[in-house]
Structures are given as C-alpha cells and as structure tokens.
Length: 419
Image (cartoon, rainbow, N blue to C red):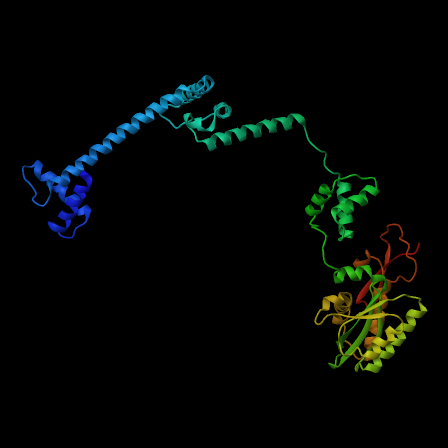
C-alpha cells in the first residue's frame, strides 16, 4: 500500500514539479538534497517522501545480506559435521605436507620435488574431486602428475622386462619388399599367404609396416600403366618409329626401325628421303618374312600416329595376327623404348659423324646396329647383350685384353686375349 502510494506520488512529482525527467535524475537530485541537509541547507526540489523510500530499501538489502551470510555458515557447519573421518585425515595429511613444502621454500617460489608430486597425486586419488580445493595446485596439474608417475612406472617395468618382440631379420624384410615391388596389385594379406606357403609366419600388420617404410603404399586400384603393360608383354611386343638425319648438304633422310622389347634388339627396316606408303609397306613385308623365318611369335606392334604409317602398312601386320596399337596423341612416353633408342644412336654415333648421303648412312647404321646388338651391354636386361653372336662364356678375371675399333675408332670394343 505504502509502495503504491509512493509510486503514485513519485509519478506526480516527476511530471508535475520536475517536468519530464527519468528516475535516475530524480534519485541524483535526492542525494544532493541529503548532502545539503547535512550542511544545514535544504534543496527545495527534493521531496521528503522519496528520501524515506531510499532509506527503507537500503535497510532491507543489509538485512538480507546478514541473513544470507548466516545461512551459509549454518550450512557449512552441517556439511562439515557429516564428513567422514577418513576424508578429514587425508585432508589433514595434504595440508601438513603442503605446510612442509612451504616451510622449505619460505619467501620463495613454491617448487615441488618429484616425491612431493607423487605423494600429492596419490592422495588426490583418495579424495573426491570436490575436495581438491585443499591443494595449492589445480586439478589438471594433479592429473598430469599422476599420468607422469604412471609413465615412469611402466618405463621401469619395460626396462626390467627387457626387449619385447624380436625385430624382423634383414633377409625377411628384403623378401617382403621384393614381393611387394614385383606384385604391385597384391595386398598385405595376399603377401602373408604367399609367405606362409614358404613356411614363414608373419602378421599382415608387420608386412604393411615394412612396405610403407620402403615407400610401397597400398596396392593401386586402377588398371595397368603403360610401363607395367609393356613389361608383362615384352616378349611379344615390337616398337617402331621414324627418325631423321641431316646430311652434309642439309638433305633430310628418314630411317625406319623396329625394337624388340624383350631383348632390346634393333632392326633397321630402311633409309629413304621420301617415306611413301609403298616404301613403308614393302619394308614391312620384308620384316614380317624375317620374323617368320626365325619362328618368332609377335602379338603387338606399337607405333605413333604419324601419317607416314599408312593403312597398308598396318594391314601387313594384321595378316600375320599382329595387333597394331597406336599411342595417344603427343605422348612419346607411350613409345618409350623406341624414343630411347633414337637418343642412344644420336648420342653415341650420329651426333659425332658427318653423313655424306643415303648410302653412307646405311653403312654407318649397319655397323653401329651390329655393335649395339652383339657387343654393347644394356642396363635394361641386367647388363646383358641383346643378341650375342654366340654363347658368351665369362672368362676368368684378366687384365690382358685387346681393343677393337668400330666406326673408325668412334666406338671401342674390348675382348680378352686368347690363351
């Protein structure tokens, strides 16, 4: 009732005597009035009823604060009376130990020894988390100390126990890596089964770890690459291509050749200055006849999309059951064996010789190809010779050798001295 009257009066005063003003302005005015009364003066703009309202609110807030503090104390006493004796003993032990720590470091930064950390971490496991306020450190620090203590415990246990599972032998690791590289489509379980057939028992996880350490990731999901296809079909694949040679008079000559991928043996089909359709068809017939005489089984012929290879050229090979495979457009790596031989013949022979004409080029290539097929070691076939003249017997080590010059001394061959 009193509050509603004061509110009605306050609204009247706000709008009547003071005009349009806010409640905060009215309160500030009353505070100035109380100060003036203390000095023996009175502010005519402040009403005595509003000052009475402010004093009543202050008394009520003080009374509520005292009542809240008293209630908290009473609840604290009730909770402390219900604590178990073991909790009190543990808390007392924590406090006593921390007092000893502080006595050691009086007027200095609190530093805990490893033993202090172990004791406090162990005691923290006996107290509930809501009782951890008795520690000088945070709960996260206590948990970290406990994890470190457990880590040291297991480290000491491992040292006493000795080494765990014995490592894989170097020979077994080499065998796993070899099988993984030779069979890229095999997974870890497939390799595990293959090793079990050999009497070797090893987990798929260990095989996976060895392969990844050697840079061999998961088995590829796609199809074969060009390199894998050529390696798997090398015994029945031929590669053919053209390359050009400029003579002394800057006349351009065209050379057509074929490479056997399995042995790296090279065949020069012909040399011409005008590679017409009739020319390529005729040299193709001659080469197919030579293959029939040697009873070679060829299934594929790789060539690029050069227009010099006419339909009649492809038909000659199709009649013999040989499939012609065209490489993609502007993809010389798809015919890498032929491109590599062109670089070899240029580097070792043609770039160091002046070609006078077509006949001269045929003689030079005939002599160089004879050296390449019968005497030159090739890294692609484990330093073997593509087409040795006879069965080569490795003689005993000897420094007594004789040199044989090829192409007027441009290339040297070395042979052991006959006994």
